[in-house]
Length: 190
Image (cartoon, rainbow, N blue to C red; front, top):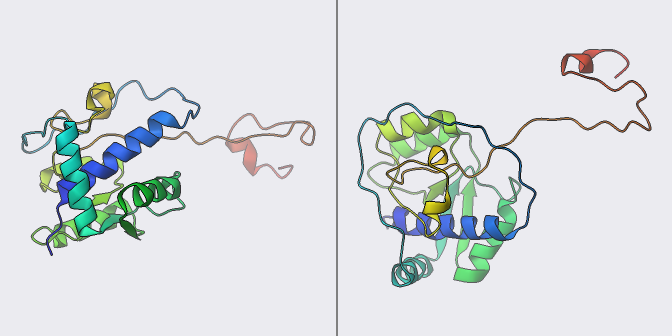
């Protein structure tokens, strides 16, 4: 059965945004600008769904009975809690194949005429390849206008879900001479 990628993605994106907006998690500064390479083609975006449109999306997801993701396992960036919320709310099962962004693109290209996956977590460095190969459905969730322009595609084909900064924490009660750079971590004392 051919998947309704836009519909299931819409449900998941809306749930992710809603969960993200209600967790009360600490925020951090995001990069000032994020600009992918120019997309090869422009796709008409879907408008933000109305309550009726969202009900239709939810009904389609329930009919299908599952959401298939690539690279969105339960142990990654709180997705376990998000997938549980999706399952509890919509009565659908989550099935994931854990893979890297390049593998996801390879699978999406192979499945282009008969999609298997509903939603994927693909790294920002792969956005251009995604757009060039027309692998992203256009969808704008109900919170689309609150996403800063530099974190989304104007046509609704992608949005940044999270970003992270690598850091290290030092217990100064145990480490009297804390490292001051990443290079310090290779010193024998650490």
